[in-house]
Length: 584
Image 1 (cartoon, rainbow, N blue to C red):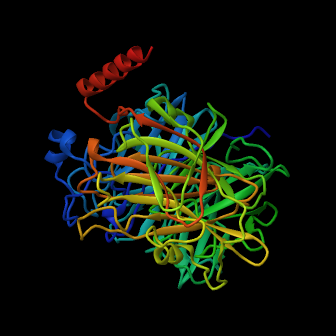
Image 2: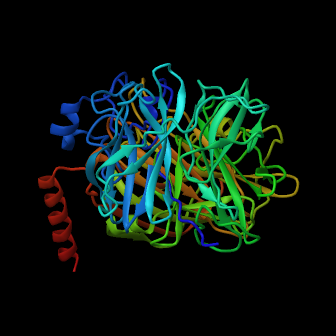
């Protein structure tokens, strides 16, 4: 059968408690906070004083103001639908679907609101969901609405004009709601915790399938629905997948990944050449986890590989502030693109088949300018080197390290099972034998403030253990800002492989990609001194042993064109064109 062409859209955020930590989807806050961090800056601050806000990002997606959610491609145009409440930065029943379009996933043009509460089934908010491309190249939105009884139900919206590549107008079908909390024999739906339908996929029986997140007690569940016409949906008696003890599953994402190929797979691809990924956002932890496994199409269930689990011992896309991500298949570039609270990333299966690898989209590199390179050199224990000549508050940095062969390596304690706790105990100021070494980003001139991203090496009985940390404990002199450390163990042999690190810095966002994208950590920091042109960048080694820098390249990053007025868009484009000509 011909492979269908599903792509997806958005995901929502259901908790108010962490709104100010968010960046991009599911109610993400990408705008800056005030210096007390009790409230966010006002609309006037964002619109009229954008250039005065040191935390406002320059090349990460953001709405014109307040908080925001998912991507797809249609007729060569990228679409980003995001959850948005334009009047305030709080949870509200009038949550809508904002909409922006792009040709490169970097520069974005605002479009009219796609969905807003209007009917009994979504009167308390148009929350998250996904898009699927139906036969005839027809996009369809499945989204969660909260109805007039405060129950969560799933609804369908379709475009009014398929000839419009910008899909400016949508309508809700009269059959809504199309999925709701009616209990089956063995698959009871909790109508108060029933949300976030995935992109649908199609098997050879001609039926569409989509999963929705829910829970029974503390058991997280992905329930499966099938449909022949995308209007009438039937709940399957058994869960698609479930796990005890981790609470409600939000924003599930289910997709295939090719084995042995660095290509993206469309959502309906089935076969021996692919494995499947199930990603879950756990409301109880505010982190998300993914497993790699097998899709049993005969039983319509997902079976994770042995050892692949959905808890703190499991794999995460990002070990920092990253939640409610969605992926979509980009048929223009034959890639799967992941988008969470960060820059869009390509996502493929590692050659080991045991984890995923992520990397910023190639298009991000079009914003690079003023390249600075450091010659290969040894950086002695206890020293640092300034990387000058770039705008350190708005930068892209790539560095590789090589460690010496030595017997003097700190012993790894087998009780150190939580890398985040280990990073908080062994931060930047704790000197080890090999490490910490890495980069100090958003650093002030006197190092009163800095955000450190580094590696530390330990020796276990049969191998070396590589710890990657993001340590914002000295990132701001403001005592009220969040300075939580993050960490992850990296599956790499440090004696036979170089340790690479790529970091995207965007004023208050620091995204770090370790070991060529095997491990990622996103942090949000709010310096008081190291802002704009006062920010500095350093390579450092605070361990006792020397470490070699084999390569370091850094670039300033241009400002992207994101949801500006027409006049501002023109100014940004003209300025970038002028700079490009000057470079020539």
